[in-house]
Image 1 (cartoon, helix red, strand yellow):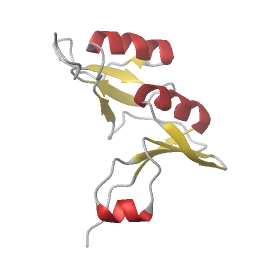
Image 2: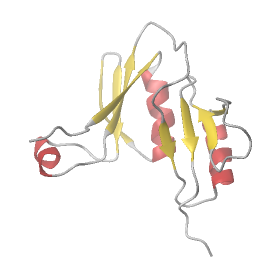
Image 3: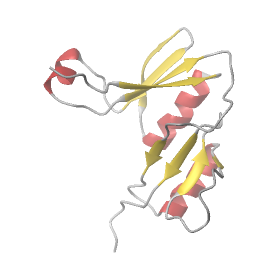
Image 4: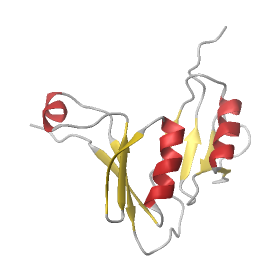
Length: 131
């Protein structure tokens, strides 16, 4: 038997705020919350589903006292499915994201951004149908 990738935990100061941001970005919903923690996902995981096949992981935002001090070593990549990359960047800026410079240069096909707590993520090429 192997292990399954079930959750990605993100340390943060305000789990509710980050969960709300990422729910808007990914069209996820809150599936669990507790003291200092909010879990979001595109499905409600059950033990049976996870045992049967690899499923998309959930995101768990956990409140911690310390702040982020260096560039993330792990980050999310998102691909817009119904609009251009530029239009998605504009939408995400409206949700509270910011553009980030991690030394990527200007000749890249992706855009590096940061969520409201400064965690970097990338907006990749669009997957929207091309007319």
